[in-house]
Length: 483
Image (cartoon, rainbow, N blue to C red; front, side, top):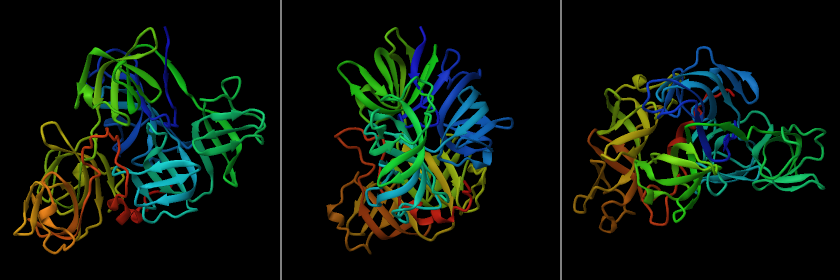
């Protein structure tokens, strides 16, 4: 039986990142390269790193926004399709494609909530969103932006990449809904599309239908997208054998033992193994990887479910030291590997990596906490040197008399912050602190409670939306971006 799996080529708006493996066995442990098609986020270059796998790209064919392109047109944070082979760590890319999910004018923006609306689509940003030429605080209504990202279980787009557009092109990718073949309209999210001016629809199927994945280009007329082109995207690919899907959980039935990751129904078996979490932690909008094979009912029977690391800590400050695969900032040490999304704002070094970093450099880190209590960097950016530092972390201890707290083992002097009453603080509660660092103590100039990264009892939020000041401070230096 040929099993059909939801595979959003270029769009990625179905909230799924998928790896289809040509052979059996675990891709992360086998030293044998297997033919794969991978949809994932660009984490760095040298040659191209996607989802933590380093792909050699010497002879790679590149396609950028439907045109022949080159590697140096790709940007960290963009979602791409890699066709090639890999062993889970190293690989060879035969073809890499990138296409934006949304291109259009900003209708509204809420910097405090970390959201904006473009072409009727609600877009949220978090600590992993990469900005280019613009930042959350400087985005204004009417600006044209390009967005690359994934849709969550609520249908909103979590942006991994946002850049300021020079052009006024309109482009929207999504699934058709509310199709009215008489009026020749349909909707994508909150946007009505009028396709009456399109002479010929570019479809693989016989007719336009609800649920079809399409790319629409056109112009805006009173909040209606007047389409000049409607093209069906490659929604399904047939595959037999081992499959891995990566995305948000958009539906979960604990009693039935099923969940939906993207558009793929997953069956949780007694033999299913869980990594970096347990079955009790499965919830809507949790980000997971699922590996398994299809049964006769078309369900993906999960052999393994792996929980993806979430940002739990933020550090911005000077590098204390650089080790073998580690980085220490203000005395806090974290692991940096190919899974770390790396980017250089200071020197615009395209092939930036840990070897590029030296003691004294000013960096921004987004960290997750591993099972053993160690820290792993999910994101590393080198910025222009700055006397101001920042830490967002839980409070380890409180000394009311001294007016200090410790966070990640670093002493923070809050005595100058009259708005903070240390007697009301609790250990384990999160603070965001900005100030200066004298080599051992952070002297706070700004501080406030921050619960974005706290564990909540009302479910597992797969991302933390909201304003991220680190991106907002310096992203206007981004002269590298020349899309």
